[in-house]
Amino acid sequence: MHTLTVIYRNLRQRWLSTCLTALSIGLGVALVTAITALRQQAQANFDNVAASYELVVGAKGSPLQLVLNTVFHLDVPVGNLPYSYYRKLKADDRVAYAVPLALGDNYRGFRLVGTEPEYFTLVRLKDGQPVAVAQGRPFAADYEAVMGSVVARETGLALGQTFVARHGVEDTAAAEEHEDAPFTVVGILRETGTPLDRVIFISLGSVDEIHQESRDKGGKSLLEQLEALPAEPSGSPPEDRPEDRNDHDHHHHHRKKPAAPPVGDTPGGDKPAVLPGQTTSAPAAPNQAAVGVPGQAIDEVTAIIVKLRSPGYLFLMHREINKGKDAQAALPGVEVQKLFTIVGTVDRALLLMSVLVVMVAAVSVLVAIYNSLAERRREVAVLRALGAHRRTVFGWLVWEAAMTAALGGVVGVLLGHALLAVAGSSLKFLSGLPLDPWRWTRLEVGPAWLTAYVPFEVAVIAGTLVLGAVMGLLPAALAYRTNVARHLSE
Image 1 (cartoon, rainbow, N blue to C red):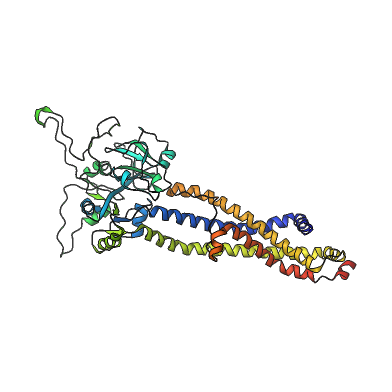
Image 2: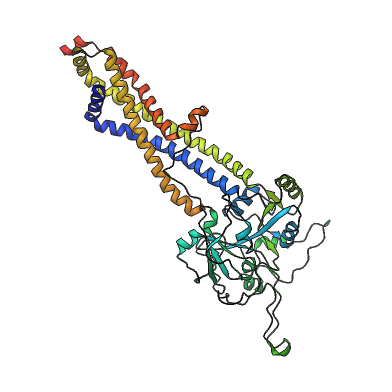
């Protein structure tokens, strides 16, 4: 107790120097803590989401981009696949289910994803539960929308309310609004803690229908103009399309829309028939019969989520699809590992910089105690004259340096998790993946018994304590060799 009292009084006597030194160490520790915790939790969240999907199929391109766009609803689509390819894949005996996705627009930055109603019952998350509707019902017609929990909370939209989507998967001020095609909210998904919380689901038909007017005007994107160029001499010439495509800067999924017969053309003066896949110009109200069947007569889809009947088919089908010229297949779990391998390089560089900050701050502990030792030599001499042993004085100074560094470690751990709390709210808003800022971080380096029972934060505080003790050895050695007689006579 006497030793602790002496150390406490020494630290309090130089409280400003102690606080600044501890803070400098704390800043480095905060960076190390925040980076490590963020990487671990982000990777765990990505792995959990990827584990819900066995195989995703899309246009040829980057498999990582395909996974990010399809599973995590980040990045831009790779391209489109013919709807006939989806039908062929769905009919394969090895496939338990195949669900198409179609992207193209957004509402206030939240993506609209076209799919089929069976998505909400077939696709299951890692907890084994389906992507169920918590309020309302799944869409049953075009221009009906089911919103993720975050979308509903951030936009304030409730069941029965309408909204107007914008062109593009990203929200920009210059994007054109589909003012003539409002959507009606008919359902809100349960909160899943996944990117699905930030998605608005609509029918496949809606994705095409809201762009029908611009296609009728004959607009073409640059990509579509390039695709319309003559083929190589060895290939067959492309077929002429009777209709032009949309003037869009992103991928859309086109449905063949037959013209409705004019009024009075039907026998008996009946109203014109509504063809399959065709909708009226206004969205169907929840209490009205559905107009059109969602997802019929579509030309293209962005991606396909595939579940196989047996895990043994997984790599076989993955190889078969990638050998073909029409599409590519990606394994979400494998692509996420590749992503964090790439990110790991940056992560290690940031950790190295943080460790260097801690080391420089630890040197400041040595400098602070060494500078104070010149003023305390008489104090040390008096303690020695009163009977304090050299080893006791040596231990006081070592522990003083260790406690200063450990205080910085505690401050750094708390500050690091506070930074994680701030970053976590932004990450959840951008990706839908939650972070727990006050959860213990797993220690990744060391023997199994150590990593199994000692959290990273405890190891960091213990490490700063040891580092401070090492930095205190030189001032303590100088105090150990203090000439008592000479300093008492000064």
